[in-house]
Image (tube, rainbow over all chains, first blue to last red; front, top):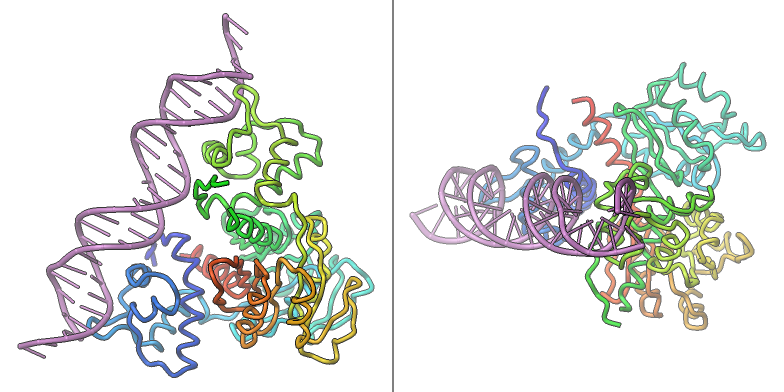
Length: 211
Length: 211
DNA sequence: TAGATTGTTAATCGATTAACAATC
DNA sequence: TAGATTGTTAATCGATTAACAATC
């Protein structure tokens, strides 16, 4: 139960990258890999890779390295990809629609259960067999359907209100594309995708190189 | 010229957040703010805020705090938002189209000059007055038009090849939405938006809370 | 002047890297 | 057994926080 070792955010942020590279190795039928080889592929130091894995237990074998299939399975489990997650998208504008159409996520185990928007013109439209509903029906939908993750693609102005509705109905995670930091209780996880901030970071780095 | 103080990535990643909050203060006609007040709003410590700003010079005044307008202008300049940037989008699928439609970026000074895709059905279509062209014409387009930033929205398989074309034609920054780490020379900046990794981070955090 | 708050140095904390004994 | 590579501890490095003198 209480296996809290307090994993640092730095480690957590690297886990999906390990997962991606291990999936690729698996596709290429690589059986085993050492921290040194993985280091060359992924760009972290071998030492860091071993430290990271050992936050969760010893997956390797001295003199041999890591079994790719086994390590991949372990990291899947650590990430929680051994379970499925039901999601809803709120806001069917550019980004909401793009996310809805993104097939990649289904493979990870994410099931899109509903799409909601204020715009009446969109109501009844279907994306990937999921109908776009009136945002006013979100609350009752959440009460009748179990939803794990809310994908927040509404404009800044409506984001906090929608987030509150999600939280009040037991949604445990919010993937936030709105350009603000939403307020949620500690029991709810938020991951932000702040596109503007990402683009501004790029511009800074470009200008920095010229100095 | 040589004003390199080697700003750490941690600081750089916070700059767009300062910029966003200062823009909001400005919209709300706030004239001045202390590091303490900004701390409460933005969530960094007052000490960190002062440290961050002092990487670039002293923008404040003892006993008074910071002038919002002035600080906003300084950070705009630090980020490079006093200049305009011409961009192209490569890949007019879900994400490419979403980015093309995103009006937010024009206001920052980004001009979309071209959209490219392999799919002939999309050629000739227009998004925001920009025609979608054959990706085979990207190379000659870049030779004839100055482009600062390439926005990479193609599938994984084509990403590196397109990136090479961008780099070979003098593009200085790549905003990469493809789920892989592209290889570029040191003279080119890359900022990744790895949506899958972001979503997997969210799932980890959700499961972590339950332990 | 007294009060407030910065700029900046010093102390602390945390994350990364190095080293090596354990062991497959 | 000898060679390889992990798991883990110790050393280093860097980032954050605390403290306070400078000064508006």
